Image 1: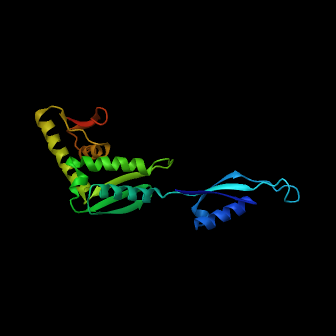
Image 2: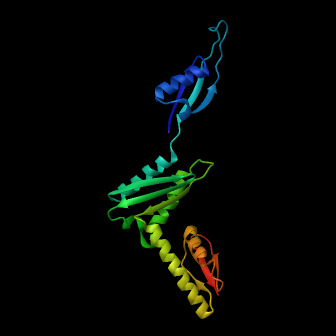
Image 3: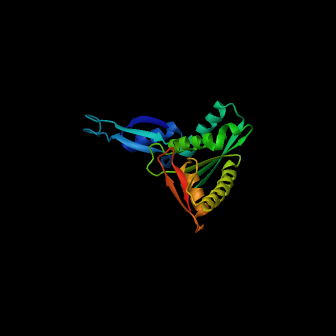
Length: 204
C-alpha cells in the first residue's frame, strides 16, 4: 500500500497535489482528512494548512498472486499462477514442473497453502473472498477420488451393518462426501470431532 501525507491551502488542493505525486486518479485512492485547515484573517494571518492522508489500496487478488509466486520461488519450482475471479470467489491455478511438491500427500500441502491464501486475501477486509487454490487440475481428480471413496465406504457400512469412519478432511472435502451420498437412502453421513481431526462417519 502506497500512502503519503500532503498539505495545501485547502483540502481539495492537498488532494490534487497528492494525486499528482502518486500519478493516479481520485477514484483509485482512499482519502483521510487529517486537518481541514483554516483560512485566517485576510487569508493570511492565523491561517493553517489543510492536511490529508492519501493511500492507494493494495489489490487483494494481486497481493495473493505475489504471495503464491513467492511460495513457488521458495520451493525452487518453475511454475505459473493464473487467476479467475467470479464475484467474491477467486480461483488460483498453479501449473509447472514438479508441481507435486505443492500438492503433497493427499493434497495436504495444497490445502495448507489454500488456507494461508484465504487468510492473506481477507486480511483487514469486511467483505470476504472465498478462495480455491489448485495445481495442475488436482482438485478435480481429488473430487473424483473422494466420490469413489464415499460410495465404496457406504457399501461397506451397509454390508457390515456398522459405522464407518473416514480419515480427517478439511471442510470442503467433507462436503464432497456428504454431497456424493445425499441421495443414498441406505446411509446417513455426519461430521464428527474437532478440527483438524474432524472427519466423516457413515452410518447404515
